[in-house]
Length: 208
Image: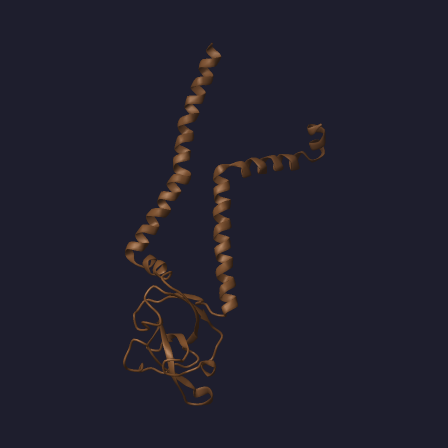
């Protein structure tokens, strides 16, 4: 019955059998599982960026300039899509903002907005770290502003901070290599060892 059913679409049936065998392969299952995990993480990240309207929705605090409000290793949630005019500026109670350092745009700063000066398109912010005595010397315009802090998760930021250190990067690389070795290399070696043993047993059985 199976042969008759498959005969009109022999190539299709063969393709389905090959696909079934492929999906039952342990290596393929592992690759699919890994792809699902990576895809889920990617979807979450892009969704978060879209929802919070910034390319930096999550950041780790790396300095003590905002202690005790923010501590080193805290993970902050940043809401973007805001202009300087929408930021509340006041000593002790102003919005905590994230911005590109005017003298080095590659560096991100997390400080409190303490003053709003100027008018119209020339409106700018003065900032200060809660743990710093002087007000920062720079002026923050719309072009510098990334967003404001809307949430904090204590301690979690230590993970990305550690990963960005040479020691952290080394550990991550070693773990990835170990995972690949355990998941793929060892099973292949074991399979190659088993096959000659099975062939020898089958040969011996035929001789008997």
